[in-house]
Image (cartoon, rainbow, N blue to C red; front, side):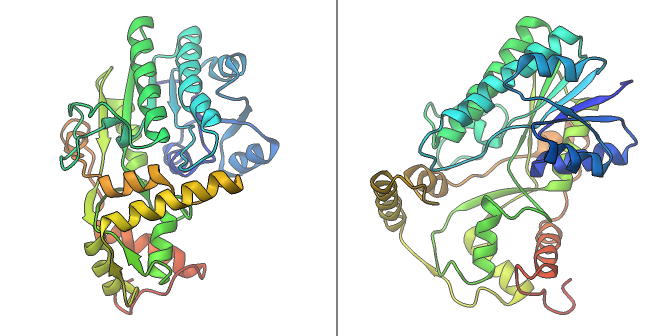
Length: 334
């Protein structure tokens, strides 16, 4: 598609990887930003910053003028927050505003960054694009992303906007130090001596960015594409980290009821102290449910090729080690 491309969420981890991918293709990228600091950051990477906010419809309309393609990667990913209202507004209302602005400005295609969590697969099953939703939510974050996706697809169909959804699992790679990456860092640094056995699904950040680009080029309008490179159990993850770094040396696997008890206790403590703790009931529910996703549709229909699991983990660990955040990789393993 001709003309500039608009990207929301360019200062986030997923949006940042996508920004690099788009710039590498030589595209003119407008990056929606909310502050002068963010504007300087994206300008330094080669994009044109445009001040605005997904909650401010007029600013979105102005940012999209002249664009045929929009990537909407902005969103809030949080657990255990005392007030989920701001997350709901950005994820749900903000995504609806993106659709409305795209229609108003004649955008030809919207690529919406959803989440694998919206699949809502039943416990013990593998999530696929056509999996029936279980009918309840593990977390407020999952609810917000599911409602956002439904709004985007429903409004797009009603208003005649060509929209494709991409649904990444846990996105990992160099540069990520928060969220689920914090668990990886704590584990490899020996700060998580107790774990529960569960499944984790991961997609390499580079593959996630590539999946967005391929979805724009080849995706079917009104459809969604899971992006998932591999699924691993926590026991397998510990074994892989030990082989690559020698850490963690000792880990004990606790029964699942222990995690539930800790989550409930921290949630009560958070209410009493008016503080936010890293663990609560919804975080434990998500952890114990685990996630197994099938990302093969993106391979078949979009032509996406996933990075091998060990390569993804090694790249992330090497980046951490270079910055003193994790132990170095063993010789011959880098």
